[in-house]
Amino acid sequence: MNTFVLAAALLTAPLAAGAAAQEHASPYPHAGSDLVKTLSQEEVDELLAGEGMGLARPAELNGLPGPRHVLELADSLALTPEQRSAVEAAFADMEGEARALGRRVIDAEIALDSLFAAGTPAPEAIREAVEDAAGLNARLRTVHLSAHVRVAELLTPHQIHAYARLRGYAAHEHGGP
Image 1 (cartoon, rainbow, N blue to C red):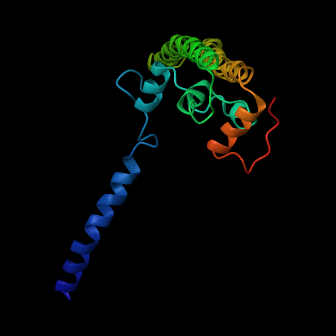
Image 2: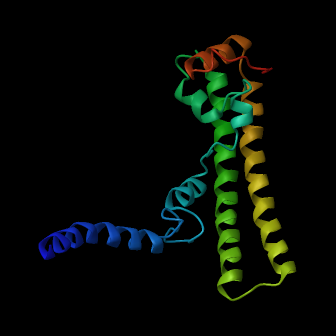
């Protein structure tokens, strides 16, 4: 009987240890970059690179192509040299603005985290920090959405339709231009 109890204890010990480890595991296992603990490293990298991160999804899914993807599909869309140049300019403008705002979003997240790291912040301080971060995120999203509008104005209806097909949206209806 003692052998049975010992064997059962040995078999269940790893399960108990695993459960105990899970109790103490962070609910945010992927959060925290070297720069700011409230953002993942992937989010920080995307913000610093001026990437879209899905911020322009309403435009994209409603038939307004994004500059990065239009440039990737330039040959398939048969862009004219003038169109390519104009889309490149739209992309450069968007990326430059998005990078600058991305850095400011990161700074706002650092400020918000620091507010709580310093102790229990006052409600007014929380409101101001959150509104600052949210306002920057809104401006960043506006930059990306506006770039889609700008690019759609440069393309023909046929190119926009081809873009939707090439991106896999052909089965969906778009309310595009």
